[in-house]
Length: 285
Picture (spheres, rainbow, N blue to C red):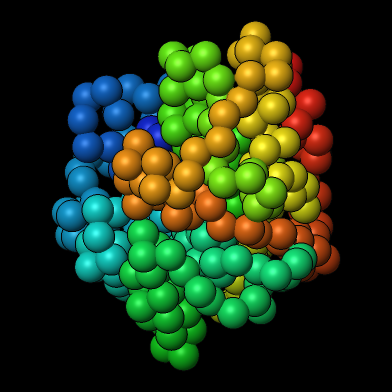
């Protein structure tokens, strides 16, 4: 299958291109710079030069493809919707896989699935309008699918590394927010990449949580990361006010209490996460 990918030079994108190529797909990936072009080429994709705001480029690249996977992070809901609209128009009846995120559910009050009600923190509240529009294309013959990843780990751990591990190394203790009893719905990068490939064959209009089913507490993650960083036992609590001051509005997302299940994707796509012991992986550094 010919697949067009946005965000291919990023953390998730490189892993997803690799999985697509291993599965026998031919990949084109959006690249806005020489560096991005070299990165997607190294991952196994042909570069399409342009940015997420270049709607004609997106439309034409999607029209050459049989499926699209949209991984790029937009700067606003308006930008994301415009890009999604262009690519869905281009790919027509081909599968269009859109990236959402698990934070839209807010606190989950126990283990929940894709049907949990939305209660997003402000930082991701804009996703509702975009996802509704993406799914609405099914009525016009489109094949929209949405993947909502949990909090990623693996590789450089992305957000966990940036907001917790790196500052913890600098300050001598890994932080967590409040009492750290809130749960994080985690997913390993490699498992998520495999889910995106599996989603190419999903039924029209499907929504999947990209989570492993491992929902440790934030304090457990901090303690494991401390061991991995050589800071055995050295963690520190931040009040939500301190966290907002240090991290910005994303602190409210990190403070969410989320327990989520991958059962739907397992049942419908035959996808099974293999990285189901994230604490051991964090502790290994």
